[in-house]
Length: 245
Image (tube, rainbow, N blue to C red; front, side, top):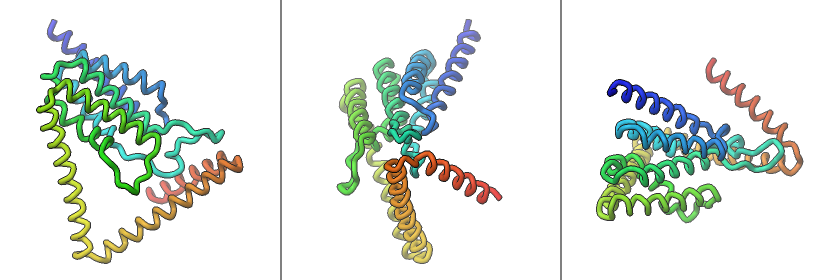
């Protein structure tokens, strides 16, 4: 009956929402967990209506653009000193794979209205970085996977439609960046004191980041990683209490 079908669709969507939220943690997500989550979400997306697909896609797009974590904890190092694959890489890879599977399963007509949700995150992953940017394994892996996803979308949606949608997304992202740049330049003129404080804070953060990286590398060499990580956790909790008081 229509009511039972609607209830079933709602239950499926709730399962999909719960699965996607499991991808939000940078520290708890693993490759095996992401693979299972991906399978579950793909099943849900191919069995709910377009509105349900759109809901899940929007949340995944939000997660895909979640900033790369900073600080020693973000390096996802095991206490034994072995490097673990970073959570943000696992999450974005899983999301790109979900999008690829859904794009292959859904009819192009159903997929076309959803493309503006997907493209911004994929474009950011595949665009050329500044010459001074040092590439890493995770970034390169996502860039390759994102390029494959773009190729798939182009084939599924048609070259002309894809080109128009891609150019629109590229134009919108460039416009937002130009606006931010203009605001920063205007701030230097209107409020030079605040602009100077912002620049100084940025420089201090870079110095602190380099110091943390050296401390972590030294801890790995000397076998004191567990002690260093425990100290970082204590300091972090102390700072949180200080901010909340």
